[in-house]
Length: 130
Image (cartoon, rainbow, N blue to C red):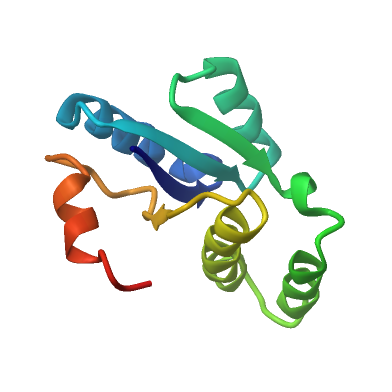
C-alpha cells in the first residue's frame, strides 16, 4: 500500500516541509508519496529543482480551470492576508487529491509536522473515519 500525504506551503514554509520530508524518509519503510501544493512560484521552482523522490509538486496554476478553486479564489478577495486562503486550500487540495486524482486515501499534514514512526498506526486509528 502506498500512503499519500497532502501538504502545502509557500517559500517561507519550505524549510519546514523539507524537514517533514526528511522525517518521513528516516522514520518509515512504508511506501509513500507527498503531494505538495506550492503556494508561490519560489517554492514551486525550488522543489522542482530539488526533484525529491516521493514528492509530487503542484502549483496553483494546475487548478486554474477548476470551478471549486475559482470560487475559493474569489472568496479570498474579501479577506486580507494569506492565512484564510491557505486554510481553504488545505481542505480543497485534499478533496482534489481524492476526487480528481482519485487517490484511495489521503492524509493532510501541515508542512511543519515531523514524523517519528510509520503510517500504519495512524491509518489504523482512522480506518473507518473521513
